[in-house]
Amino acid sequence: MMDSPSGSSEVNPEVEIDLDEVLDLDGDAERRKFIRSLLTNAKKSQDVIEKFIDDLLEKAKIL
Image (cartoon, rainbow, N blue to C red; front, side):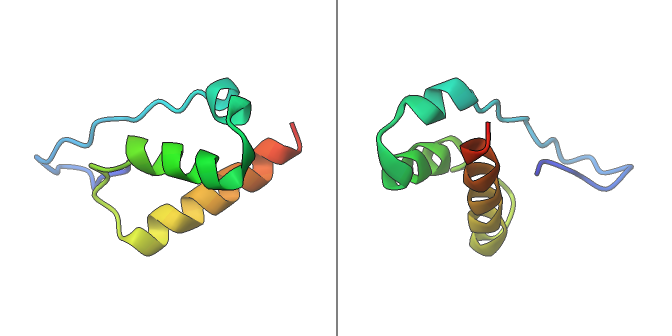
C-alpha cells in the first residue's frame, strides 16, 4: 500500500498492522475503525484504503 515511484523524494512511512491485534477486536466494524486509525496518514485515496481494508479483513478471516 505504501509504494512510491522510483526516484521520488517523497517518503512514505510504512505502517505495521498487527493481525493478532486486529483479530482480537469484536466484529468487522471495530476492526475497520482500528485499521483506518492506523492509515490516517496514508497518501492514497479513500477508495484505495477501503479496498485494502476489505481485502485484509477477508484474508484475515481464513487464517
